[in-house]
Amino acid sequence: MSSPYLLGLYEKSMPNNIDFRQKLNCAKEAGYDFLELSIDETDEKLARLKWTPLEKHSVIRDMLDCDFAVRSICLSGHRRFPLGHPDRAIREKGLDIMAGAIDLDSDLGIRIIQIAGYDVYYEPGNEQTRKLFGENLQKSVELASKAGVILAFETMETEFLNTVEKAMYWVNLIGSPYLQVYPDSGNITNAAVRYETDVINDLRTGRGHLAALHLKESLPGVFREVPYGTGHVDFSTMTKAAFSLGVRRYLAEFWYNRHSNWEKELTDNCQYLRTFVDNSERV
Figure (cartoon, rainbow, N blue to C red):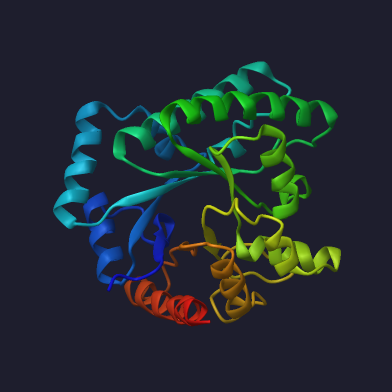
């Protein structure tokens, strides 16, 4: 009997200097079910949006040969080119990035793009950046709808969209099945601590709209590179709630550490997280 859920692996958990086929094989051997591709703000990763048909064919061949696929994209390139930026040229570049990611998803058979919940990132936001973000979000969803690709908000570390409830404002406003929510467990836990609210109640506000869940550790005010089991995310309660809400895709989000045995870390983290999700589906 097949597993009732899938657990994926974030690409940045592995060294950047190994090739794509190696990444697929390492993720598979460590026990994961799929890979989440990174399209971040670096020129190197953004160049993936310009892959030629031959380059895309090579990626598809690697996935088929390895019997292991990319099933989602983490699109964080909008940090550098946000959809709500007051500079028109930067906003247009942000839309080009979105269009390129949707085309890449469609061509590679990827299901979901996790989009960053930022109106702007390196600049202060205001009503104008929020308005521009909304306009370009609408354009983005129209592109995704045409391609049959789901855009799903990552809950971020900034005030603009750091809870599921805030993400749902935009989901309800746009009103499309191609715009959903992809919460980050570490970020929404930090938001709940900051606002003195219940993180599970926040997760429940996304009922019917949760495409997947990032399983990431955090500490109050610390959003990255906190090893599993050393932070304050209650993975047991979080995964039970998510599973009861219909979430069947989970993603191990952690980063490569050159000072660690990274291959062992892949396996250890997979086993650690599966314990929680396995127990959740038995409840």
